[in-house]
Length: 381
Image 1 (cartoon, rainbow, N blue to C red):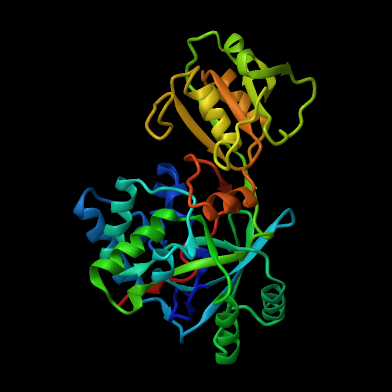
Image 2 (image 1 turned 90 degrees about the horizontal axis):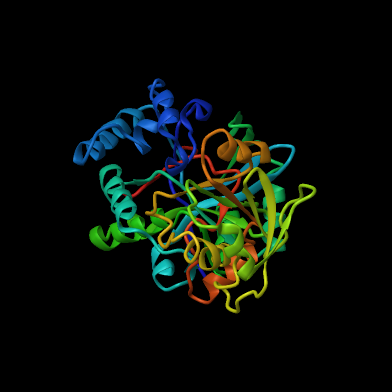
């Protein structure tokens, strides 16, 4: 049910040197180190400067690095990323923004104005999609077979970075491209990560109305080939008698052995101990029954007074895979009050929310490993 197409990808000849993490998960310290390399994509995706100067620097740096880059013939790409523990793969192609407008590319999260405007200005400066919008589709055996066959061929990239092996194949056979297009014309896509990048591309198309701008570059994976890790909450200060308050809505038990939380189980590190919290009643509703919603509506808002988790300074977030010892250190050594450790949101829950036209609470999913930025760029002019 979506229109996809090949595109003339722009690639750097040494991706190990050039590629970075996505712009929104690079810390200030990492960015400072990356900028020591003149051939890093950091100069394009996170340029130095303030206000308009920042976007002008992105344009200048892109023009500088573009001279060293390779422009492919119209192609689709297959990207595999992973290590011995886990790997995922997906196609990199362009999808019509009309399909996004019409709800065939489904979202599960609302955008915020400040980061949206930042991405719009970035696209206006570079006239390119420089980062991947991560999408998924319900598993498709025919697509899996095509991917398996492509992976038998020689890739154009094969390198290691950030603890993962990254392999990229280029697909320029017209018959195979048309076959892939036909299959995707019968399925939906769901945005997994990159709502601001997708929305910014749509705004750019509406403003400038170019033919190539009508499409946005995405990564599209089978939904059974992705991994979602917990997106946990750290509370800086707690002034109420939280244990007594929790017992009103939860069955509270001290954990005798460390296990990953079950669905609807919230684990809490507080007072030097790990606690297991099971709600006495699970709310009904696709969004209301999510563990992140239960935490928000039964603990963060009523007990801790945290209503807007994006703005409240009393909370911050840890996504991905870090040890329990590191969480304990955040409290015991760094002076924070508590950690809330969650069962990860499932891909099925994400799809159900998107199918219903609803939105998840902020910081509901952490897809891992993160896709590299800089493997290929999509020029809009």
